Image 1 (tube, rainbow, N blue to C red):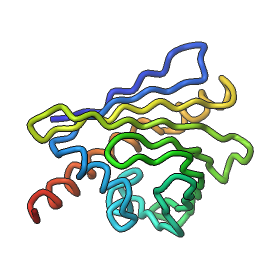
Image 2 (image 1 turned 90 degrees about the vertical axis):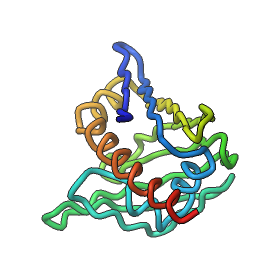
Image 3 (image 1 turned 60 degrees about the vertical axis):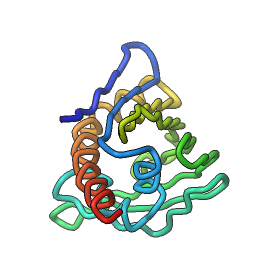
Image 4 (image 1 turned 135 degrees about the vertical axis):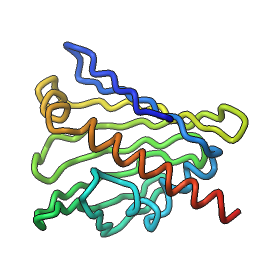
Length: 161
C-alpha cells in the first residue's frame, strides 16, 4: 500500500511530503484539476468538502470548505501561480481561521513507469511558529486520509478507461 511520508524538519518553516499512486500522472493530475473529483478526496475522513470555486490553471484560484460531522466549517483559499498539467502545481494556501498566514506549496508529479506516479510536495510557511501550528493541527492525518481516498477515486477513473 502507498503511504504518505511527511518530513517536518526541525528549525525550518518547511513541510515536505511524498505519496505514490497506482495510476498514471495524467489521472493523478486530473484528480487535482477536476473540482468534482477533488470534493471526493480532499480532507480528513468524516468531513464533507464543498468547493466554492476551483480553477486549476496558471493565475487561477480556489476556495473550499471542510465541514466536520457537527457542521462546523473550516474554509481555505489560494491562488494557483503555476499549473502545468501532468508536471507541476505552485499555489498559495490560506486557512481563513488564521488570516495572514499564507503558505506556498509546490507539487511535482513524477512518472514512475508502469502506470505509477510519485507526487512530491514542499510547503513553505511564513514562520517557524506558523509551520509548527499547522503540523500540530492534525494536518498529516488529514492529508493521509485524503490521499487514501484519492486511491479510490483513481481506481474508479482507471476502471472507466
